[in-house]
Image 1 (spheres, rainbow, N blue to C red):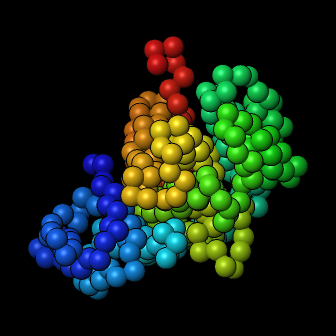
Image 2 (cartoon, rainbow, N blue to C red):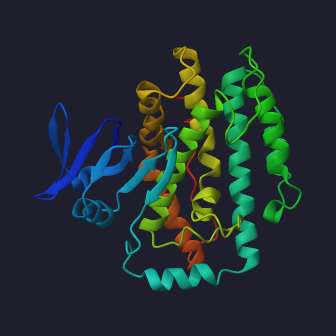
Length: 302
C-alpha cells in the first residue's frame, strides 16, 4: 500500500487515539490511521507531539522529519527494531568486505551518472557523453568519475535559465529547492534501509563520525536526478524563489513518482524498499548487485 506523506506547517498539537494520529490546529482537527502514514514532516516551531504518538509512528516505520527555522529538514526519527533478523543483518553489513563495498559503489555511481545523462538529454534535447563517463567508472570509483560527471552536469543543467548556478549545500536559489528535495529523498532512503534491517550509519563509501545516515547518502545517489527533474519543472511553473507550502508540496510528490523495474513499475517510495532489500541480500551473500530501477520508461511505447 502506498503510504501518505503529511506536511504540517502551522501551530499544531499531535496526539494518538485508537491507533490514529490526531492533528489539532487552531482552526481544525483531523485523524489519520497511523498505518497509512509513511512520512510526517514537521515544519513549525510550535508543534507539540506526544510521546505515545511518536512511539506509534516509529513502530509503524514512519519517518518523522523535523525542520529548522529555515524550513529545511534538520533531523529524523526512525525505527531501530524494524526487522526480525536485524542482529544477523547488522553483523553481515559490518563484516562486508572492502571489495564488495567497492563493487557496490561502482554500480551505484554508474547508475547515477547514467541517470544524470538521461535527464540532461530530456532537458536539453541533445546527446551527451555521460554514457561514456559511466563506462569509465572503476571499482570504488577511484578515478572520481562521479566528480567529473557532476561538473559537466551542473554546467549544462540550468543553461536555459539566466542564472549563475553553483551547486552548494547552503547556496541560493535554486539550491534551496534542491536541498529540500534531497533531504526528503535521504529520509525516504533511510526509512527503506531501516525497514530492511540495515544500519544507516555504516555506508558503503561515505564515512564520517558526524553522519548518522551515511548509507542512505550512498544509496540515494542514483535517485537524485528525480529531485533535479522536479526542481526544473517547478522553475518552469512557479516564479517563487523561496520555499513555500506549494513548492514543498511539489517536492514531496517525488516520493510517489513512478519508476521502472524490468518486471513492474512502482512508486519511488515502494521502489526504495526493493532497492534496500536487494542491498541487504548483497550483504547476506544472496546476490551480487543492488536492484536499482530505471527512472524513466524508455521503451517505444512510452
